[in-house]
Length: 47
Picture 1: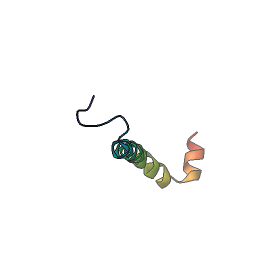
Picture 2: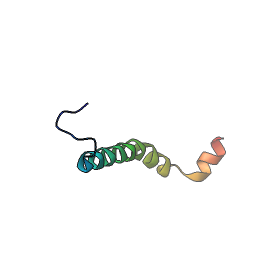
Picture 3: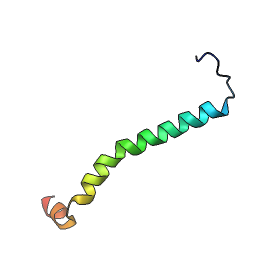
Picture 4: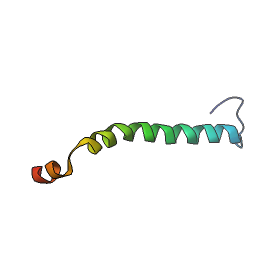
């Protein structure tokens, strides 16, 4: 429960949505960059 925030406060909902999307992008950036650096032939031979 947040004091001073109404249940229909569009700015709060928008800020929360932007923060969740930003956190998801930040969490997936490191593994995606690591996977992009691997040579596909080396990855296929390893399996």
